Amino acid sequence: MAYSFNTSALAALAPLQVKLQTAGFEVLANGTVITANSTNLEFFIDNIKLVFAFQTDPGGTRLEQGPVLNNELTLFLYNFNNPMGSGTTAPLEIGSIRGKRLWVSFAVYSMSPDSPKTVHYTFLLGDGKS
Image (tube, rainbow, N blue to C red; front, side, top):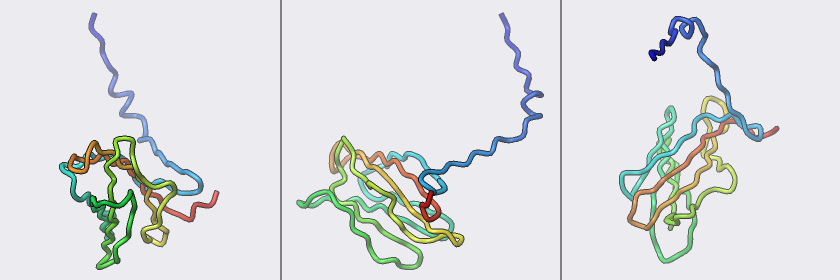
């Protein structure tokens, strides 16, 4: 039995507009990245560069913020190598874009310090007021 699909009916539909919000924030972008190795992951949002620099040392899991230089912010993620995941427990403010506060939330999963990282991320805009 042959099936036919009426594409002209779809062409008449306007594109869907999707807007996501959570706790008063507008979701700017979200996704999942599997890194090619265990080093850095870089995000470029307009004129802002955000770097996740994965580091391993004898200390515990922690996040340290580097200085902002030329619209570039590096977050040093120490010992984010847990297969159960490590990440933020609340959005982290990283700057502003187009007159709105910019935030990031993320979770990182990794089998070992030297293995690629699976990073789930969400960039948020606004003040977070419901």
